Image 1 (tube, helix red, strand yellow):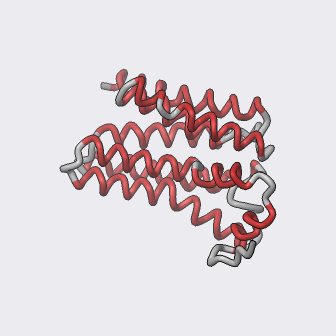
Image 2: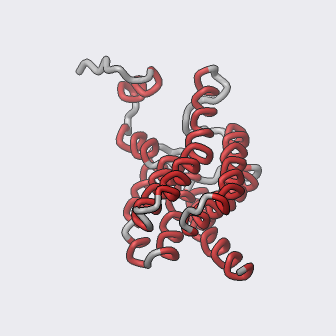
Image 3: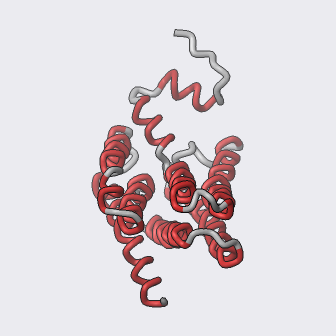
Amino acid sequence: MDIRLPLPAALRHRVESEEHLWAYLISLMLSPPVVWACWVYAIAATSRPDRPADLQYASLFAFAVCASPILFVSLMVRIGRIGDLHMRESRERYIPYSIAIIGGLCCAAVFPHGGADPLLYIATLVSIVELALMLVGTLFIHISFHAAGMASLITATALMFSFNHGLAFVPVLLLVVLARLVLKRHTGAQILLGVLIGSLTPFVVVAALGTLV
């Protein structure tokens, strides 16, 4: 089949050569930046749809925390400094994580002045704490950020909305875990550690906020 589509060269190569294409596409479409951007937009759209401040803040978060690191990684891949978008080497993740953390801190700093929903503030804090833990953890072991990102979304959604809402995303987490294992990007231990970090982070953030308030 001729697949000379208007696709980026790297993605076209994957389509032509990837043995487990479905797993690669799942990893790409359900990467933490994509998942978190969709998550904050969903919070903004469902919590108070009549407040444009929520969507404005979600857009700021999506750019500062999610898009900026991707743009940096894409540039590094293009010039050959990083192997691919999934950053197989731990050392390749240090700067993108740092960019996302700085973006999250900037979002948290402007939050009190924007009038956005407090749930979006909690989501921002969850992302900052999780990224910081991932950055520190990556110095020692190649933790699965995909697993951590989905696990944090599940736990945070359960805490902010309901247990059933969080439970609905569990099959997506299992699909992401299966994709990462099929692609051999992580060991089972690295994925379990990511799930553990992602699951506990929202509890820590909510508990800390409760203590401060």
